[in-house]
Length: 204
Image 1 (cartoon, rainbow, N blue to C red):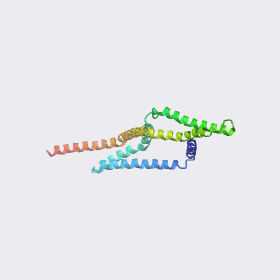
Image 2 (spheres, one colour):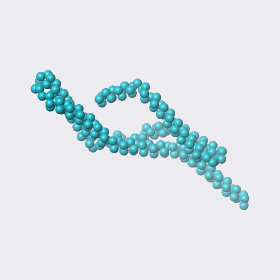
Image 3 (cartoon, one colour):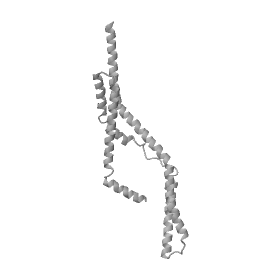
Image 4 (tube, rainbow, N blue to C red):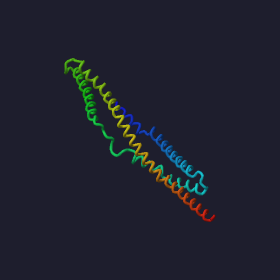
């Protein structure tokens, strides 16, 4: 069954009929979301500002948005996964041995039955059939148990990868968009304070 799944997956991957278009659509959707998020930040930051300053804030956000999607893609490829391979649990070698034993039971049972059919061994269907049944049932049971046992570590591994990716994406967005916008807002605040001091000095 595992070989059959691998063969089918290999055939689907080579045709490319079902994988290329959804991936391209997802990339376009992701880029549109990034652009929409940048526009939202710029509109909220420039709300209530005079026209020239609002335009300066929006331009700073747009300049930072250039290449932001590509930078996020690079971060996703570089920082999305923790370094190294996922750690294998301590019970992994035991599970491999048990799975190999289940396969060996099937082989021994099959050879035993083949020997009886060929007349090399005496007729005794009970033991070889029992061995084959134990191997056929035990193999999927061991795989199911391993899947259940690995669910917790896999979830923690995925959460760590998501945390690293979120932190990297937040740092990239902050450096490219939020910091330039904050710099423009700080300039506006400084100019406004200086203008207020000049007005107060002149009124005296």
